[in-house]
Image 1 (cartoon, helix red, strand yellow):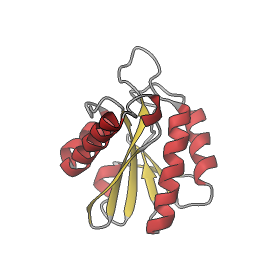
Image 2 (image 1 turned 90 degrees about the vertical axis):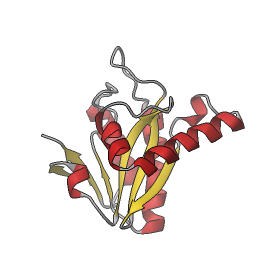
Image 3 (image 1 turned 135 degrees about the vertical axis):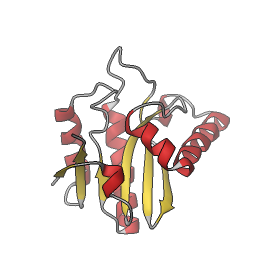
Length: 155
């Protein structure tokens, strides 16, 4: 079951956890928490870009890249999960892809099990990406089940 904490995820989750955030498939972390992560953890951004470049070289840079991502240990057993949950960016229409979010959280669940770490995330896909939080939170709860996972709401 999802726990909810009001606060700044990046200021409060600093070790022994997985922080999941949504990224676009364009190699840009230009807004929201993605931009904050890019600035705070440059290694996470570099790994995200390298992941997308490999997909481009391997010929998988199309809709198949959605739902994938890369997990980066940035410090103190703190992992940033850069998950590709939308193809493009912009606020003109919903960019969040619900199937990609589901697949991304399946991968995060496996990583959580492997590393024995709790999962933390913001309202992925419901901010700049324009997704419906009721739908997204249902996807997350169903995918993560009984695992230790926490939603952080910035006020």
